[in-house]
Length: 226
Image (cartoon, rainbow, N blue to C red):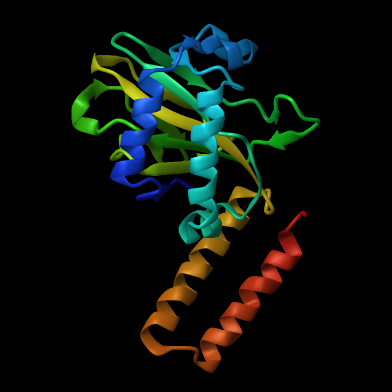
C-alpha cells in the first residue's frame, strides 16, 4: 500500500527547513547505508545527531502527531527520528530494500521498519529526475510529490531514486514501526477507516456507522502489537 499524505508541512515550514538545511554541513550518505545499499547509494545526508537534524525532526514529528491520515495509514507504534538527504545532479540510489531493523542513535531502542516514509522538501519543478520508484505487485510506482507532501510505502518494497539530471532534490526520510505488522492487514484497516469516515460525514453517527467502528477497533485489538 502506497499512501500520499499531503500538506504534512506548510509552505512556510518547508521554507524554514530549507533555510536550516542550506546552512548545514552535509556528509556522504553512505554513513547510514547497509552493506547491500552502500554500493548503490550516491547522495548527501545530514549527520544523524546534528543539531539541524534534531530541530527539523522534532518539527516533522510534531506535525505527524496531529495528522489523522498518517495515523490511520500507519497506525504508528514507533517513529524513527527523521533523517535528511540531498541528491545533486548525477546523484542516485540504486534498487535496494531498507534494513529490517534500525537502531536509534544515542538510545537503547530499535525500530522495525514496517513502513518507509519520504517527505519532499523541494518543489518538483525545481529539479529533473530524482523520482522515487517503488516496486509493487502491479509494477512500478513513480513518486515526485509537492514540497511538504509525504509518501508512505511498505518497508519490504524494492525501491530506488532515479538520477537527478537538473537541480537538487532535498527530502526527509524515516521509518515507522506499526502496531499492525502486516501490510495487508494495515491496508484493510485503512480502507475500513476511510469508509467509516465517509459514512459518518454523509449520514452522521448512524447505528451502522457505530457498528462498523466497533468492527474496526476489534480488528485493531486482534492484530495490534503494543
